[in-house]
Image (cartoon, rainbow, N blue to C red; front, side):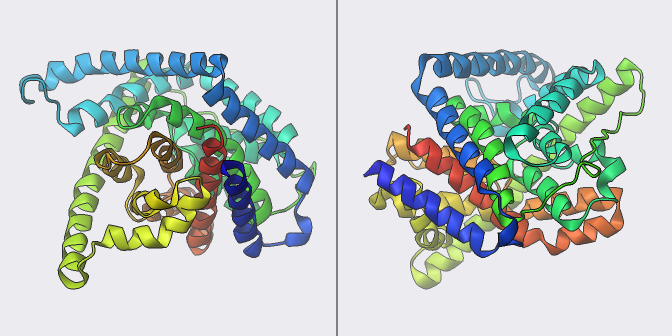
Length: 392
């Protein structure tokens, strides 16, 4: 039954994506089959083998150590504010982002990360049948973040046609930045975070290849990555520390606003209809939860969490998931994989703003296809959850 639901789920995702395709005649099916098979193999390796368990364990241990080091800095500045044995969400989950951002800055400065991103992207371009720029951008988005990644391809932003620009933006929305992975791991199981990171990378290529197919000529397929302006080591350090702090503050502000707003809307709906806004959305998203592999009796509850992620953000949804103690382990795993991406309404503004800051005309183009961007990124999350559900 599980496999039949998964096959049905993949077909539904493909049909929904195919229905809004820009150019169905240009869809290349061979790379799609290869990437779907790769997704399944990678999900099996990560969730069902000792090697995958070892890799995820090592990744989780690495971030656990990094977060403990981050905690030293947080405790030095804020020690005594929290109650004994209790740490506020901002201090324990968000402020460590500052330290992770600092490490990313050091790896960028020493040219280690740019090399990894560039050559991994070149290898991926052989598999996905897309351009080198698109493949580079997908890997870079998963490390640098959905707005920062566009700075590295600033030279080419203004010259890109709408189709290629869409793919770059879709990659940015379908992944998550490495600086906040540690925060996710404190709210959901690290193995689901790692699995989602890998599956979303290929899922982004799969959905973009159906929704937005095009051919890139050899003359157009040139990868020019902008080198960062030369800074001293301590200038760079200060910049990345402040960038990390800005991310932490921004996420905290959004959480305050969205959690309060959802509570207000839930109160209004409960008073008028006798059912909360999230429960209502749960019924709408229940069919998607079911095709992802969630049992029907839990699909409305799971659907409400999925909807919360889309209308608010993944942090709010992950906090909400922690409150649903009645869900089975398999459902929690499937929903967790779905939640690990930037596919929400606020990301449309973030990405359009980032591109507009570099090239105003192209920023307006991104704003126009914003809803289709969210649609595609959501399909990526659904597809990743379906594949992961096969092995949970």
